[in-house]
Image (cartoon, rainbow, N blue to C red; front, side, top):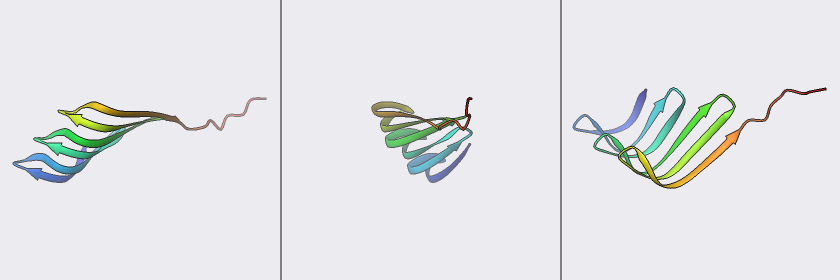
Length: 77
C-alpha cells in the first residue's frame, strides 16, 4: 500500500489517497481512518466497483455502490 496526502501525529489526516493492490480510496481521513466524504474504487479482473459516500472509521455508512464489467472480446461462432 502507498498513501499520498496529509498526516498529523504520524496518522493519515485530512485529504489523501490510499493506493492498494486492487484499488484506491480517495477522500477524507481522521486519526488514520477513512472518515468523511470519500470514494473507493476496487478492480478485480474485468470487474470494477466504486463505493462513494460518507465513511466513519473505515466503513461506509451512507452512499452509492456502482458495479461495472468490461465487455468481453471473445466471439463465439
